[in-house]
Image 1: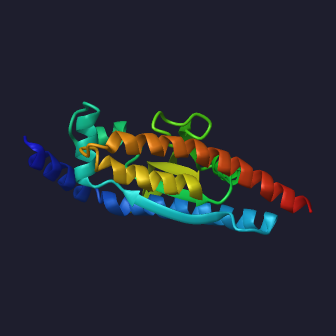
Image 2: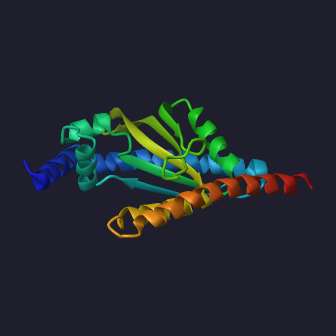
Amino acid sequence: MGEMGNIAAIRAAMEKEQYMLKCQYAINIVEAKCKIIDEQLGMKYGREIMRSISKRIKTPESIYAKLVRKNLDVNFKTACEKLNDLIGVRVVCLFLDDVYEIARMLKQQKDVRVIKEKDYIAVPKKNGYMSLHLIIEIPICFDEKCEKKKVEIQLRTAAMDCWSVLDYQLCYKKTMADASGVMEKLKKHSETIASMDREMLAIRNEIERI
């Protein structure tokens, strides 16, 4: 079966399982949890905590591409078992300490099981990417049946999010002759962003003590 046939088979399996609807259900649950945490922390500290919450569900085309890239069997069952980022929620905060407090509050919830945690803030990726990733599993009830869905939650500051937008755009420009130069600039500014986040947090704490 060729690429188009594999993608069509994945799409058919998703439709049969009402997968997109179940994924949206899982997203709604995680989004609601994040909004409640945002309200709680906003009341506690008297300031803005979350700048934005965004979400996405991988398309059949993206699922196919990732299975091929990871050298896995190209079928929907394998994708559900082996891939952790089919459903994604991104939380953007203003300050670094908020990232970790939100993560802590999410992990404490009884219906949330943490499968994996990757702190790319403490240890950035080689290209300079920074974010805190939580792979969680939550129960959803659909048509009187309960099942568990994995959701990847990315938590980062606004500065980190700006950097990641540029990095994402660069991924589609790697045939450019000067792409390596741009990549080096991005990596350098990742270090600047990390320093700036720490300094802004220190200034905020100083202001709060006045």
